[in-house]
Length: 472
Image 1 (tube, rainbow, N blue to C red):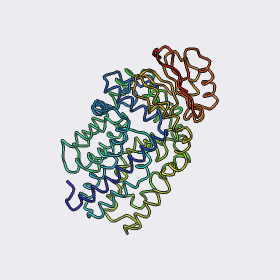
Image 2 (cartoon, one colour):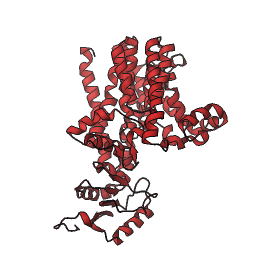
Image 3 (spheres, rainbow, N blue to C red):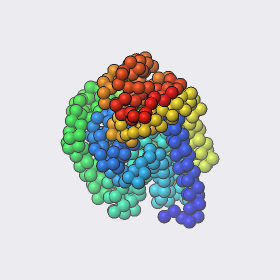
Image 4 (cartoon, helix red, strand yellow):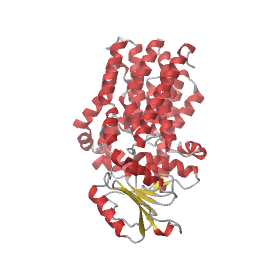
């Protein structure tokens, strides 16, 4: 437990962090800046599970276990049984990112740091730009793994076997790819931490879950292959083929890893903590090898920044390296004020708080119209709408976001079509939005129920009651 002298500081620090993170993500969502991918995706999973319906994500078309196998949602869906609300996800994210300072404080104390230095490490973690940025970027279950990773290391070092088994098992439920992290983490625990049983156990459950995912879950729920394989160029069209070609095609691997975007990514990843990293104490990063390698190998730029979720599993091991460096007094910045100045400078330079003064205000001219139109979708019938409006309507079995790839699709299955033509958002051009609008106006099966500020709501006539009439 946290010392009584630190309890007040802990409550204030954690409470303030939760409030800031939750407030920012909620404001972003309510400004219609969240999206079908990824907030709508995860919200629909929990809603369908809580209703006892097949958790098939409608705009992906397959069971969520065929995507990233986040089986932890079976437990989280119990909360949605009590009250289904997308803000619960945003609150969970803010809480788990903030309470990670609990095991950080214990790990720092275990390493021999003073209470003051332990709190310094905790603040350094909270100021790392990825924490603020990932909290803004919809929701991702990987954030739940952050305090669990710290806790599992703490339990291994303390030889708390039940706690270690529980925390590592829950990590597997946050994302299938974290099984690879556990394999390499097992190696690190075995070789460098001298926790041989813990290392063997971690590596075994990591390999076992990866095998189950690739040989059972993926073929069962998504037989056409994993959606992310296209990010890895010429390395293969299946997970097995890609794994083999990593060794058989070294030239292709080098071509995709020795790039300027990768250099920039590594700089972004390390610079906020560079003051407290020493080469002798970087061994915790061995655990991140597969995750970091996949990010470097990918041709998707989203995997090469500290905005998206792909670097989240790396952060705990960076912090562990900082703790070890500070414990051995090898950090090149030692005065607390200079360390905080460094971290604040990196936060203000790399955190995306500036979006609230620009990008996130870009749709204000249609904000009221969006809200009014959404309120008129008063049933759980099927809906077609803009990508950024999906998270406000995902509590139904089927919803699809309009895009350039599907704007000319059949409209037979939809009972509501909500379209913001002025701000089409992700995947839908203004031209495609206008074409879809004209098509709807000419379709005799739909009636226009709402129009304001280039926001249109069309409702299928077959579901309108006797007293229903189009609203101006």
